[in-house]
Image (cartoon, rainbow, N blue to C red; front, side, top):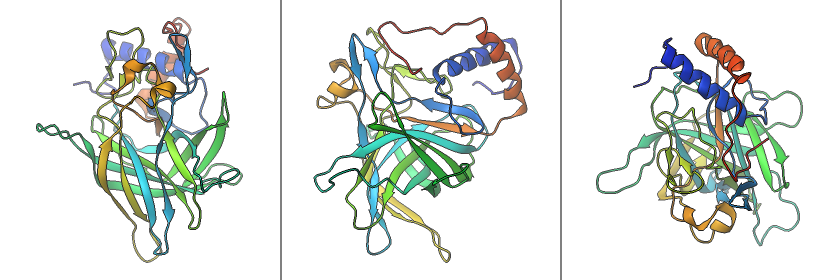
Length: 321
């Protein structure tokens, strides 16, 4: 089992490779502080076999009811990395899902639920893995100006069209993650009562491998002409009832009836060639952590390595720039 920050020739070379690849795919530099520790980029204009694919959004939003509970549908995806350090920031991608009841521009989502949850592993009987108990849940509120503060998020339209939005949030309460442990992250837009807006979490660009995932990723299309990188198990979707905390009592996240998310025939026009039909789906997000002394040293080594190492491009594929 790989131990992070163990200084040996092999580990140092691995760190250089990871950092070089990481810098290559993160040239859309984020403004979040800290060090990137897990990364799944959005599917947004990737070219495969001559066709461009822009991905789709999985419904993940809830609306406040008369009892003060947000009721809706929530999506979640699993993750694990090499760092025994807390998650301090999250970046993700998504957009507003049109509904017949919404005319004109949608009301911008004012809040998001970010919920870190334990893993219920897949069973020998064939049951898929899914989120277990809630370990840390919190609401982040839209930043309306000035520097991003803990407990806030920003929203920015990203190209090549304005249909996709990038979100960045600083956590009010960092999530204490253990290296090599599988967790789930749920992200859901929270809308006020009396509105009909819906928000969706965008799916991942599977042609870009996440070298920070622990254990490594699997290429689900290893015999094909393009890769379909995938971490862990399928992303999932289920019902969501979220009661935010108040000054007198704690909040709660009630969820269940999970279904696995896979590519299917009515999505392949946006997600990729027909060969991806039925393959496990990942969602687009990145996690940031506090820097440690050893990674800072390795970061310097990686920076020098970038002077010597050029990016390896996948034929027929356009990556973020």
